[in-house]
Image 1 (cartoon, helix red, strand yellow):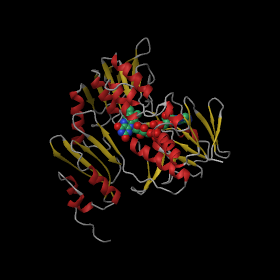
Image 2: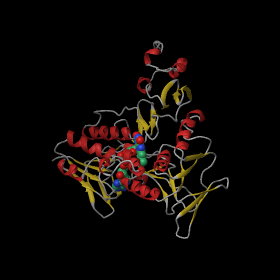
Image 3: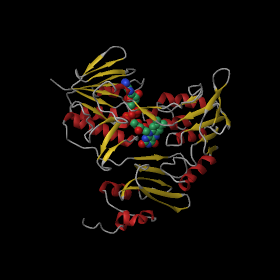
Image 4: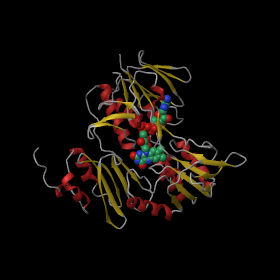
Length: 412
Ligand SMILES: Cc1cc2nc3c(=O)[nH]c(=O)nc-3n(C[C@H](O)[C@H](O)[C@H](O)COP(=O)(O)OP(=O)(O)OC[C@H]3O[C@@H](n4cnc5c(N)ncnc54)[C@H](O)[C@@H]3O)c2cc1C
C-alpha cells in the first residue's frame, strides 16, 4: 500500500512540500487542504498588485490544473478544525475526515488586530492574503488620506501602496524610527526620506489610541496616544502575526510561539511535521530555537520537511534567510536575525548607503543593508561558518568588504 500524506496549508511551505513529496514518493497519496479560495500564489507580490503595478495573472504560481497533473488532491475553502494525532486524522469544518500516515502543518499566521476602539471598522485593512490585496487596492483607489500603523516590513508595504496610489498618508510609529529593533535612527532616516518623497509622513512617538468612524461605520480618523487626530479614509494595520497554533492547542504537539520542530521539521509526535512561518525550529546556525517569517525560508522548510517525511533524518534545515524591499530607488535587504544579538556594528558607507551587522557571542547573526547589497554573501558566509569576528568587527563596515579581508581564524 502507498503512503498517504496530508498537508494543511497551500502557502509556499505547504506547496513546496507537496511538490517535493510528489518527486520523492511518486506513488504516494497527497492531499492539500487550504482554507483559502485559491491555490498557491506569490504572497510577496500581492503588494505590487495593491500598488496597481501588476495584474492578477502573474501572481498565481500553481493553477488548479497543476494539482491534477501532479495527482495531488487539492481542497480549497476547507478549514481544518481538529487534529486527532492518536488516530492519525484531521477533521474539517464540514465534518470531513482525512486520515494520514504522515501530516504536515504549514498553517502560517494571521495578522493581529489593534486592541483599540473601532479596530474592525470599514476601511481598516490588514494584509496577508490575495483577497486582502484586492480589498486594499479597491479601498486606496477611492481614498485621499491614509493612516498606517506598524513600523516593520509589512507596514512599509502599506506605505509604498499609499505612495503608489497617491494617497497622502501619516505613518504612525512608536519610538523615533522605523523598524527600531533592526535599524538605528541614522539608517532609518534613509527610509523615512524615501517615504516622505512618496507623500507618506512618518510620525514618531505615536500609534493609535482609537479609530473614529462616520455614520456608516467607515473609518474617518485615527487618534494617537498624544491626542493628535489624523483624518483618513483608509487605514493599514501591520502590527504583527498571531501564529495559527490554536488548531493544535488540544493536541500533544509542543507549542512555543509556534509549533516546535527539530532540524528535520518533525514535531514531538513522530508522524507530524510543520514548516514555514508557523514553526519554532532548531536553527543550527544560530544554535538555538528560532522563528523566521520569510518566503525563502518557508519554501526551504517545506522542501526539507517533505524529504524527512519520506525518510526521517535525510536532510537538516540549515538556512540564512533574507528579505528585500524593492519599493524605493535604492535596494534594501535584511538577512538572518537582524533583531537578535548582544552587540552590533553599523556605518554609513556612502551617501544613502548604510549597513548594520548584529552579533551574538562575537558571531554574525543577521543584519540590514541599505543602498549597497554587495557584502551580503560575505556576511551570510560568516554566519554559516559561525566565525568569531569580535576583534575585527569594524572591518565588516569597510566598503567592498570580503571575507578574505579578515585575519585568518586562530586555532582554538
Ligand atoms: C504582503 C506581504 C508581503 C511580504 N513580502 C515578503 C518579502 O518581500 N520577502 C519575504 O521573504 N517574505 C515576505 N512576506 C512573508 C512571506 O510571504 C511569508 O513568510 C511566507 O509566505 C510564509 O509562508 P507559509 O507557507 O509558511 O505561510 P502562509 O503563506 O501564511 O500559508 C499558510 C496557509 O495555511 C492556511 N491555513 C491556516 N490555518 C488553516 C486551517 N486550519 N485549515 C486550512 N488552511 C489553513 C492559510 O490560510 C494560508 O493559506 C510577505 C508577506 C506578506 C503578507
